[in-house]
Every structure is written in structure tokens, then in C-alpha cells.
Length: 355
Image (tube, rainbow, N blue to C red; front, top):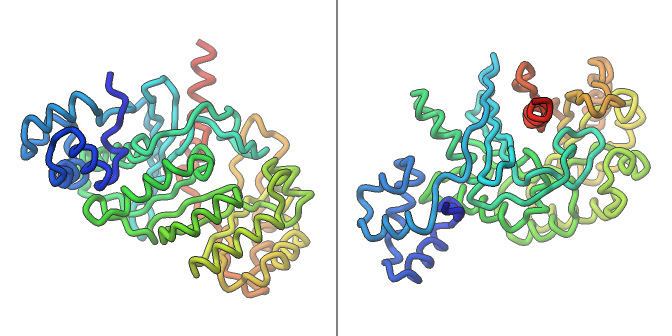
């Protein structure tokens, strides 16, 4: 079975590979047209690619590194896919409907080693990174689903916020971003893509130097080291001071705004005093950040946390707005289909264990 995904190559990389095999480099564009414009379902369907080239690709590559294991559709139009990889691992991908278009949340790792104490995705330790091709294929599987249901809709936005820490799989994620934004392929604009990180400071700096122009979101979730260390173990090695230095470098290097993600946990980090402390922490960066407040989705294994009540959310929001911060409360999608990242995968694994 071929395990090298054809989706894992940038246009330039595919051209170089074809040339190494004795084919014309220019045929890479024909192949890309079939993959991303015509959206063929198999390499053998590339009718306008010369047959010897098709046979070469079929012998060395695949378009199918995952199969659909489970699909759940919400009343609000959200669709959550559970994909099974060739090694049997399960990953999640979510299609969300917004007024501005269709957004897909992709997974970058099998499991996660960051170990945030409130997160369903970290219940299983990381077993491996996804390849760039496996990340791209998630987008293509969703797009093919849209094609099949006849909606004539295109994926317009991407959030790299699924299972795993994207910057812990840095090279594959960067390759994925280059493939997604290439104007000769899917041509999804960089400003329509958001990458979220829990705060790998040295990778934030490296990402800034690449100047990919995609949006960056930082999962902060606490305004001080004591609290952040309690709920996010990454803070032990990368305290808030180091994270803020990396953020400042990113802002200076790119001149782009960033999003600060803050999940609200009842009577843990959702008090007015926490909001005031967060405002103080971010005050000098106020013009360059948007604070995104996130309602918590309870997880059975993390029963110590509960969702903040509406009054606490509004009070937290009010503090930030009065301090003249750009602030929003994340709209929820698919609350009737295990909306929290990792919940569908966890449920399927529990069912398998009980068989």
C-alpha cells in the first residue's frame, strides 16, 4: 500500500519530484489542476495527464491516506468527521458554517502532548505527527463531501485548531499552509487561515520570520503564571514573560494583529479580577490584539471544570471593553454533536473499548 500522499507536495516540490523521475517538471501543474480544481477522486481519473505520468504517480503515491469512520451533522449545519488513518488512528475534522463562508477546523497530530488540564484532545498522548498530505486531505475530504451533496459550495476559511499542537508539527503545518494558499491550487487567502498555538515561543518567532501572512491565535487562558501553570503545564517551561516576548517579536516582525484565546472556567479564571489582570498584561499591546472569550465545553474526564455562567462572561467582556480592547465571545457550533474538540474521538474509543 502506498503511504506517500500526493497532497503533501507543494507545486514546486511536485515539479522537482517529477523531474527527478524523468518526467517533465511542467506536468506538476496539470496534476495540481486535477487535484485542486477538478478535484478528481483517484489518480487514474487524471485524463489530461499523460498515461506514463499517471502510472508513475499511481505506483508511488496515493490520494487516500484516510477513510471516513463516522460523520455527525448538527442542526446548525456543522458537520464533524471522524477519519481513520492508515495506521488505525482516529482524527477529527469539523466543517462550520458562518455568514462569511465555510470554515474547516483541521487536526495536526494524533494525540497531544501539551496536556492542558481542561482539554479533551490531550486525553491521549501524542503518538505521531500528521504529514502535510494528511492535513491537506482533511480539507479535500470535506470539499468532496460538499461536492457530493450538491451544494456547490467551496471551503473558504481554515482554522488549524483541531487535535494537537500545530507548532509541535511545524514543518508539516508550514507545508500545508503553503499548499492551501498557492494561487494555482485552492487559493485560500492567508487572511482566511488561522493557526492556533498554546505558546511555543521559539516557534512563534520562527513563524514570524516566514511571513506567511496567515492569522495567529495564542491560547493564553490565564493572566498570570500561577494560574496558567495550574491549567496549562506548558507554562512551566515557557512562562508568560517568555510568551509575551515572542508575541512582541511577532507583532514587530509582521505588523499583524493576533488573537488571544481565553477559555472561561467557572470560578477558576473568569472573575473580574482575572479580567483586570488580563487587561494589564495586554495593555501595551491593546491595538494589536483581539481577545476571544471561549465558552467551555465540559469533558467527563475533567469534571473539576464547569462552564462559566452568562453573567460572569458578560462581566469579563465588559471589563475588557471598558479598557478599550477588541473583544468577542466565540460563537458555538455543533453543540448537539459533541462540539468540544476531541469528544467524538473519545466517544468512539470508549465504545470500542467496551465491545
